[in-house]
Length: 246
Image (tube, rainbow, N blue to C red; front, side, top):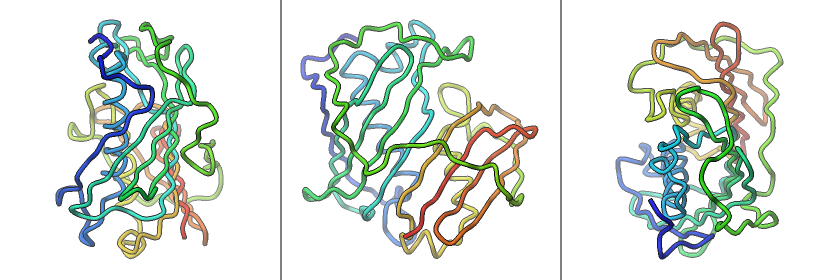
């Protein structure tokens, strides 16, 4: 698709929180929060001519490599939220995108995301085949207090769950959807922490693809201020999640 006439380098998009996106406490699920952020990023790429459809002409797609989310509070059922997004950096095969969620003008969520261009046939990263110079970059305009980082999962941990990858776990790029990893891990957290909105921030590292029928092991390491999950396949880590508690 060509660049839309209404294209702007900073996009604001409104979303109404519906009941299917909420936990039993009536507040937005963390997984659906990530979905809303990513759908906003996708909407910006569509009007900017670098969407999934555009990139598929070259067998390319954006895949998420790292994501940090900082939360002051979660929106609730019926809230109208505004998500703003812009790009901090974009070069060759990599991009850093910022996102912020507001309710009634108050910032409640900030996120920094790191994306890579991925060839869906060779299953390897490569340079973006589409023009992107029309995007103004905002390297100093940060959405979070801290940037994303490499999670240290190389410490003592215990096996807490084993599972197989099912068809429902896969996305349009034919690998496990990034939000699914988060869902698998949050299902193993004490529900009181989730329902009481005890998550101050969380960070995800996506390291290796997982595909249909893969067998994986979920590991956990708990401390007073944080919980770290890692997901391995054949002793190689595919994903890491760090939950920071209030």
